[in-house]
Length: 215
Image (cartoon, rainbow, N blue to C red; front, side):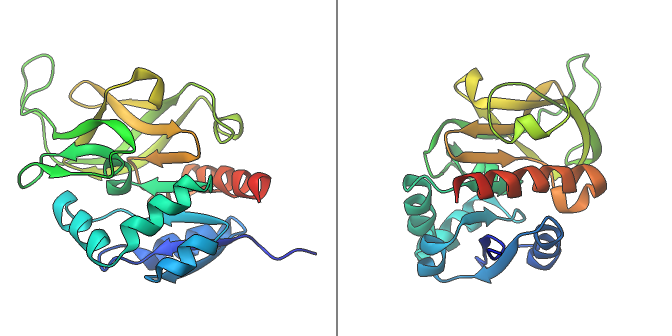
């Protein structure tokens, strides 16, 4: 019997690593918390957990060499899963605490939620709590997910992709925004699967199946 796929769970100094590692293990994966770029390059899959601020996270990943290792892994065709802020870092730039370049792997930018909803009522920011994500598009993970699920969100900024085709999950809060994006071997979500109970496990189960398919 082959061993469970090894997942590099990237430790950049500010992530909810323990809960994400436990969630990945429950989906049959073998997470290894690491800040070693070499571990990323030989892993079966790479997961970046998401907490913190855009600028600080980008600086930490670049300083440690982890940003380059993540790019190398993605360039190699390996299955990348980004959670919350790690969806945002895939884009060209973010405006949290000033304009900061992102990885530039998906065209678009990250902006703060508006102060008011489409009807003019004040919008509570950050967006915290359960919300419905509606899936559409083509990706191996989507074949294992229901058309819509409730997930748990905590964020004040949202991605604005330049290409509509890159968005595979949408949610409404202050207007519709991208809750999940997929481009090639990159899949990333704005919500927290590790905090989303059964729906979150189904998402990570789908990731596990995708990793096994590409292994």
